[in-house]
Length: 158
Image 1 (cartoon, helix red, strand yellow):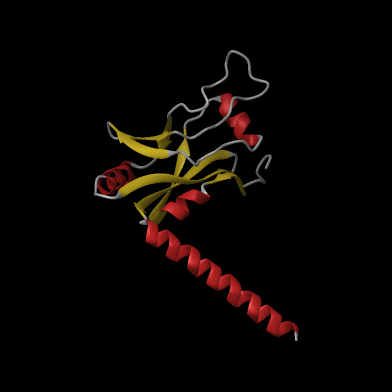
Image 2 (image 1 turned 30 degrees about the vertical axis):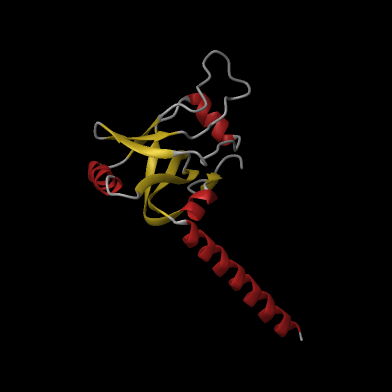
């Protein structure tokens, strides 16, 4: 993973489970308020978004449940791995997310954690929960697409 190219996007972690469990209606890019050891741990390519979610508390967006492990060379200045982290969003975006997440079946989940131009960013998604049959249907569509691609590749090889 390492450092990001100048002005480029270096992905640290993706939440593939979110795309399996939810329909993503809208996405937002947010900055993160981090401590020094968190940034160093992220630059080493270590983070997990799987259990994460976003809460709106007193008009501020907070990233909860995301695991950024302690920095190996850190001392007493190390951070707590699952502490809540403030998200930097425009007020209008926070209000929109708050209104939508209050609706039944909606939540806000982190989708991707990355560095953009040297700054840590997180892509969050406004999500609707999938039912079990929706998940099965999505898996079936993926399998069908894979089989069709294999058949077309085999036909091209002839």
